[in-house]
Image (cartoon, rainbow, N blue to C red; front, side, top):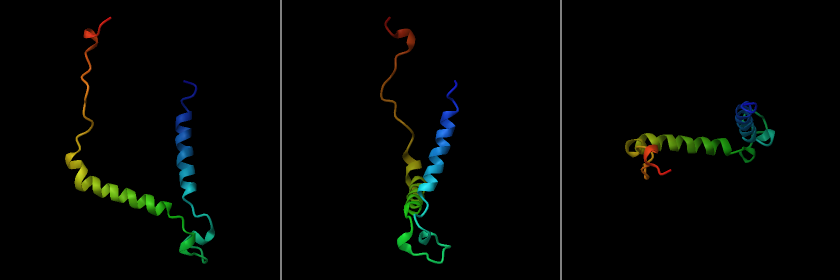
Length: 84
């Protein structure tokens, strides 16, 4: 009980560090800077955003029409039928 606060703090830390990791490593990678050049751009946000857009399109075009959820492969016996 006394450690329940750690999970939200950990999630906030992961979100903050993930955002910081996507910043350009130099001023030349920021589009609003006069010294902007594409060779300084951090492509991580572009790549991650592109993949998320492609997955969103793929989900709505194909997957949601055939995916019905996990398949139950083992029938669990009710507790009354278990030995012991």
